[in-house]
Every structure is written in structure tokens, then in C-alpha cells.
Amino acid sequence: YPYSYCKSVHNHTRHLLRQIVLWCLCLLCSSMSLLAQVAQPYHLNRKNVLPSNKVYFFLQDQLGYLWITTDKGVVKYNGYSTQLFNKAEGLPTDDMWTMIDDNKGRIWVGGSSGQLGYIRNNKYCKTTMRSTNGTIFPYYLHRFHDGVVFFSPYLSLNNLPSICISRNDTIFPYTITESLLDKNDDRHNQITVFLNEKEEAIIAYSDVSYLI
Image (cartoon, rainbow, N blue to C red; front, side, top):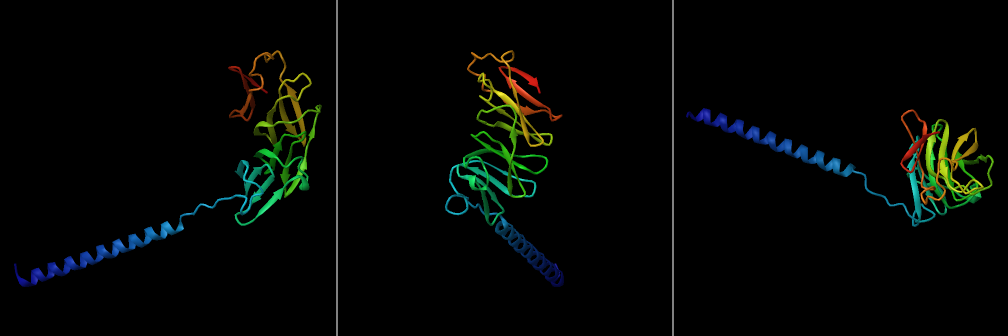
């Protein structure tokens, strides 16, 4: 081939190789930048922001705050600092082990006590329990319309479980009668509460279900 042609091919090849090298460098820099942006895990414990290492439950609310229930109270974490809610803040007990946020943005919290309440605007608000003097054990806590629904054993005088529904800061317990449950069945306190697509509360027991 003529010398001029070979020289042209050589220059073109060098130019192409230079572009490939530059492209690879750009790709490498972009990858390193993405790796640098990967969030590093941050462990929350008693040494930094939590009052206890015994954690039961956590959730992220509609505003992005992280809520954590512990045996020493309820923690609200904004990514930098925490706010603690305990008996000094009005909670019935420090040992709070269940929690849910409702459609109004309230954080409902419960434990083994005679009271269920919620936190709104950084203030604990207690509810009234209708027609019972028993201890509330709120299991299967769910959003239900503008409040919550949950299952609680041993609320009634005959030691049968109850389905509890909140309405306007009042908790209404509905005893699951012996006509539905076999009291001699060891599973009579093993009820599941869940919601269907229409936000209707369903209780499931012993292979059957009932619409509340």
C-alpha cells in the first residue's frame, strides 16, 4: 500500500484507541462515583441513639421519620437525633411492643397495659376503652378506616378474646362469643385479624373466617 495510505490508517487507529481509552476512564470514574454514593449501614443501638437494645418493631411514617418500639419507650428518629416517648411523656408503660401508623398520620402504640393510644404532633394521646377493665394485649394491629383494629385476648369476663375497633378516640371491644369459638379448643386465642381489598376487617379462626 502507499505510504500515505498506511500513515492515514495508523493515525486513524491511534485516534480510535485514544477514544476507547478515554471512554474507559470515564466509565471507571462514573463507577467509582456511584460506589462512593452507596449508603453505608448505620447501626442504631444503646451506644448512640436508642434507650435499649431490646427492639420490638420499627416503621417509617408518611413524613420519613423512623419510629422504633423498645422496652424503654418509643423512639422517633430523624436521621440525626432522636426523641423519646415513655411514661414521663404520658405513655401507660415504657415497654411498648406494637405500633402502626393510621391514615391520619397518627402513630398508634401499644403494650401490655389497660390503655392504647397514639402519638400525634409529638404528643401522646390516650384513648378511652369502652366496657372493659381488662388488660389490653394488642395483637395484629392494622389500619382500619380512620383508626385501627386489633385482636386482644382475655378482655371479657368469660376469658374469651375480643376484636377491638377505634372510633373517635374510643376503643370498642367486641367479644367473640362461644357460638363462634370452642372454648375447650387450645387455639381459641390464636386468631388472626386482617383486611381485605375493601378495607373490611376479617377474623380467621379454626379454618373459618368472619367479616366484622
